[in-house]
Image 1 (cartoon, rainbow, N blue to C red):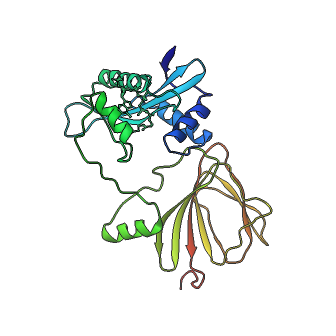
Image 2: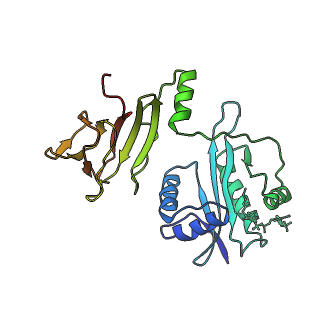
Image 3: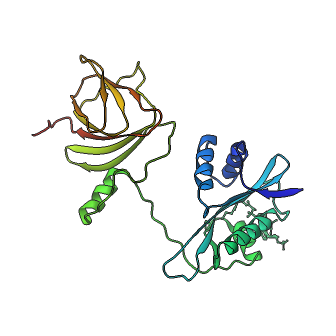
Length: 268
Ligand SMILES: CC(C)(COP(=O)(O)OP(=O)(O)OC[C@H]1O[C@@H](n2cnc3c(N)ncnc32)[C@H](O)[C@@H]1OP(=O)(O)O)[C@@H](O)C(=O)NCCC(=O)NCCS
């Protein structure tokens, strides 16, 4: 018998498999992090179709208020049925359950976007009452320095460095903020990471770092290891081996790093 229920710890692997069948390679850790982020928001329910311990399908939903619409609008953001369980009514059941949740939340419309190449999915949606009514356009929001500096040149944008901070993650997150001839500015977010002892940084350019939040240890060849607190900044000259010896485990450590082109020196 097939039941519908929200995801539980331990479902990550099977959910990851379903996402791979949908064409997205998502690791177990990423699935876990995203499921727990969604679980914290009432407007983003996820339902799994399960047969005992087997996860056979999933639907994820998001609703939001739109200025122009009298009622919130709900959108199916993910729908997939295990390839061995298709054609048995599971997709229809998941969409019906999504409709019930959306209606309970006061939504007036249930919508979705679907890739142009998914002809089978289009036939499925049409057969359960969906109609094509709009054209979806999208543009990648590249966080690459080139795009951002081009946009910044066209418009004076204000942003906050603490916006969009990631949850704790395995990897340090590095985001390019701006690049100009001679300098590149990046935000680095660490959660407990450090530079491996055997591979210290050896850069051909000067780097200036400012610690904005959290705490970290920094070793620069020839100097005593130092502890950086918010507000502390330091210039790491080119060709000086250096390592981040530790970063705070229980909170995010946020850095601003300015990399100077190798031919320039600060103040020149
Ligand atoms: C699309 C998908 C979710 C449908 O789920 P499903 O469980 O196979 O569909 P159901 O068995 O509930 O089908 C419901 C109805 O749609 C119809 N249908 C399903 N696939 C169809 C197809 N390829 N062509 C025509 N009708 C189709 C069924 O005939 C059924 O109608 P009926 O109840 O009158 O017999 C599933 O095939 C899937 O996961 N596909 C790959 C991922 C995907 O494309 N997801 C959507 C991304 S936008």
